[in-house]
Length: 438
Image (cartoon, rainbow, N blue to C red; front, side):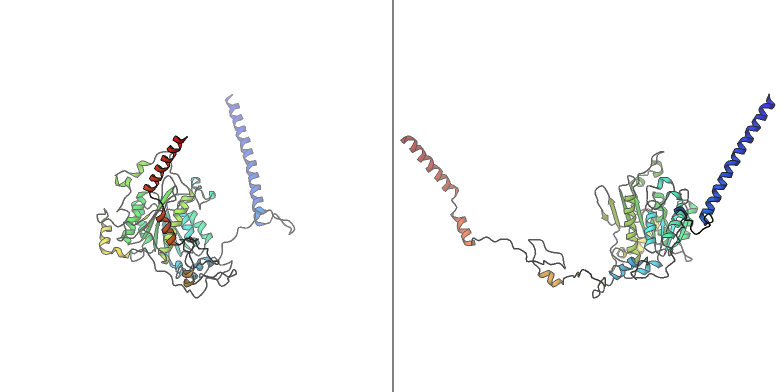
């Protein structure tokens, strides 16, 4: 009986093996067909049409040796160079010599990296230790097929296709470890132990990583921008940090940290922070806008900008360095760098007012000279903005036809209260007399 059972078992295994071999042959056949479909060998005649699925992947564009201001559809930089022609930026091409490090390629960092790539930044250094997950798909930038890839690899893959002119460095690294701290500082430093980047953007989501960036930037005397989004996903902020000039991140620690609470103990199993791509996109836009103003030296740079989506509120403030900061290096830099060097306002670019912004003016739009604008009448109490004037006469408010003297005379002839009371008494007496007569 045991021998018969063993024989039956062997036969069952052989049947399963045979079935699996048949399935493998079918899979191989489908793979061969797919390969023939891809290289076109499945369509020997020219008249045979290939299905839409066999489209060739479009090659990325070729690199541009220089930024051109020529207005043609094939120029990826024409609309960026228009900023220079309009006098917003004095030399936009200088962005190609700028190098920016982005720490944290998440909901804010990935979008900031894409914006800088589209702006034509010279070089990007990307830092993150995590991998792309399907849970990240509620945010911008990453795609479902990139799940499982490191965020730095996925970001590099996407960005190189957007703009091949940008030099990309991806570093999969946890900067909060001892080795990670040393490696992070080494990557940011040049041969003379000075910073080789123009700006550092912090897009991390925890205090420990921010303090690591703060320490490295203090040691390298490197300006950086910090950003964050609240756990309820409806507010955020950006902050400019210049060593010795503004408050470092240790000068004004968050309330949770100042209270001595370890932020890692606040996380609970099965509970995650909320995340909205809208809020993260807004914070990323503010962050990159600040970065561009610092790199290209235009406009005003606000040291701190907050955002509350529930009230559409953008609070701003300045954070001075703490003389009693717990970081000794911050205190040392405060004494060596005067606060007057705070880079909040950049000189405006030279504007050639004699030349038009656009050569063609199909609608004949003109700006009125200041003298004409000043002589234009105002409507009521509302004055027109500078450069605008009324094309038709403005109706003046109707004047009273009564002369001022007559108005004064009318006011003086009005009966007083005593006269009115006397008239009332006279009328009452008259009425009583009439009643007695009847």
